Length: 547
Image 1 (cartoon, rainbow, N blue to C red):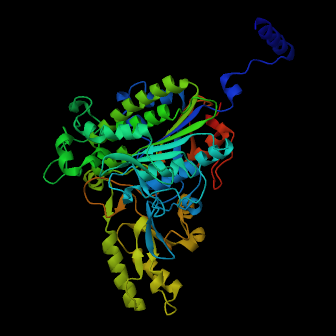
Image 2 (image 1 turned 30 degrees about the vertical axis):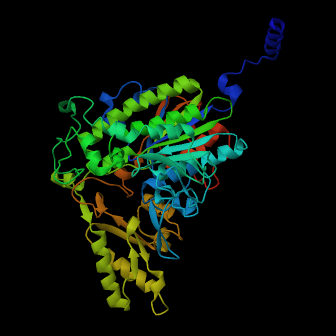
Image 3 (image 1 turned 90 degrees about the vertical axis):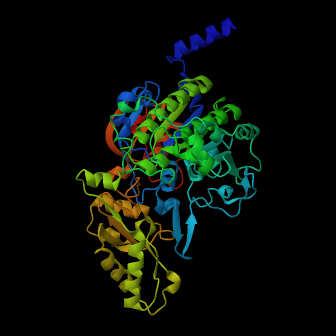
């Protein structure tokens, strides 16, 4: 044995070659972990930085690479589109996920992004319920996870985990081994027959422990003394939505009592939802033996609770600040778990967000900053009355959802001039308070709009699934948002500027303010793994992050 080592050393010396490092020898990491923090604004990296530990966000920043100017290059900016765009490297115009819900223009029917009546629920105690009738069937492009499966002849293991079905399914892709999501009614983690016919034994065992109820029994109080939360408004304020009527949403939040009325789904709007999601992610790595051989596996994790918390309380809430301090702790624990189970340097991780989020409108107004609430339903009713008076037919507009006008095509007979109908609609909507611009989709390329907005409209427009007219709101104006909570969905930086952190295998340390896009993530992973980019990809590898 010693002679073989000596001969090998002589051959290396003679050739001038150096021994291969782990990365050179292996060619790919053992495991890729994609983490999407639902509704995480980029500035949260620094807003709470002085309270973060060295093990979570600070570790990603200190050991990895931060793309500081990562933007969404399409509208609308919603959860399903974000997850689809991250993993396909594409946009709604191509990948076909045009919203969380969208109108199929040919039929006028609304379709939920992952709804699939052809599959069955798996793991739901009440049988084949809607919560499990989900799949990636509506996603029209391959994902980077699909491409990894193809590149390894389906020997890679790909698993998606999220509280939201769309946050698990769309990243996992079409060829995944599994995707698991949370059923709020039963408090169980479930899947669908697209992936498997039964839940794995390890997940059944986890479900039997009733994890949601277990975490909710702990209540929710601040991680640190509440008077030290200097980045937030006072806990008792008029900008936040209560869990139940007549109960102010103030700390401590008695989730142990609220669960009796609201059920286990309550866990989604607490930091416990993040902890529980990472529990399942760890179990998947352990029991599916992910990262244990030289065939690269992929774990796609989406942390949905920050979105629920952000919607209910808004960016300036103590609840949001506490949620991110707890997320930082959970993230540090999860990275330490990967170090131990897969090995530091053997895995690649990226962390980003599907979209960001705006401040509460009333909060902005109270501080002298312009904002407003667009009454979508009232506008649609008034628009339909106006068009009926002009064209003699009622309910010509089906929907204004996703800030787009979807016409009732079944009602559009030959007596109605389509060009005149669109022109009348544009003229009406341009007079509505809060509306900045209204543009016909087939005239976007010649519209007098800033180029950045024009490109995002084009990227977000899918002729089969998007409305005929795009509505652009004034900054901080939103559809049917009342004075409590917060939301997202527009082109503006408060909705479209997200973090993008890389760490581990193949990643150099640093940061850059070069403008990159959500669609650049998949081709960057493809470059690192030396696999083909997804088949609808329009993004480019971010070369700055590569060693």
